[in-house]
Image 1: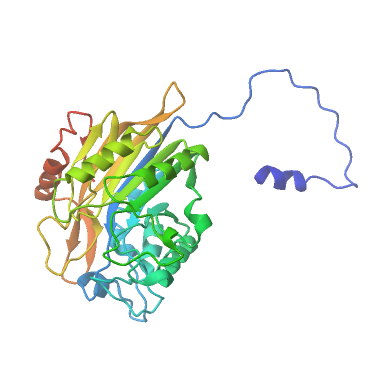
Image 2 (image 1 turned 90 degrees about the vertical axis):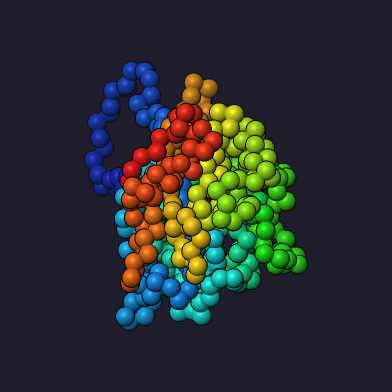
Length: 363
């Protein structure tokens, strides 16, 4: 676009003709080669529970909400990555409400503005709460993400959108994301709009694999799969979850798997040379009765490097333990204290991830 504008702005008919330039000798192109590495960070479930310290602390005196301070402590890590991926678990309500929380969410749309402000670029939206606010809420959520400049996948406004790969450009590298959920909490897919949510019967990953193949065929250099399943509040992945991840990583079209829904951190692991974060925990939540470890969190960070075969693979996997700090009048995402760090690190390494190369580092 810039080159086109410069050409369009060249002199008009009244300008003198420039002197003829000598023909440049033939030689290698001066165009910069594509980058050989990119970094990607990913975080867990974004849940805005209502009538909590989180919402009360974010409420503005003149109306509306500002969630930016919640993310401010981790924003430097998020924004420093080439690509930052979030998981918006719930639909948003119209600005001004009415809002609702568990068990059927419709949350403040300002949360999306805060995610964008913290540096998130891409967000998965397939979850067991995707249809909590019906088709209207689903569509509104995607519209709000679009307005904030955050790409998304997992829920859709049209049949055509549901089969169009979500691709983002990162300095010349094309990254695709696919996403799916194992449940809609008993809410049926809307008649005639069965494509609205990527719903799978875990461990059968056929629809996700088909979407990954479409993304690869559309030019994705890297494909990330986000899976929302299976058991809540359990640090151990279920057998079905393990089978689903194995099927995804066995595909040449999937390079990384990110897990959601458990609300606690689950292990990271290297499976046949590729990485999975089985459960990223909560990115933001304030449960009425906190289950142990639901306020433990993490930021997963992956460095992808182009190999001699031209394909990208993870050459460095890192995890940054953080905490959801619920104060007396506000909630902040904070660097993990020593106890939280040790607790999260123990879970992350339960499958031998550190021996396989995972670095667990402070914020």
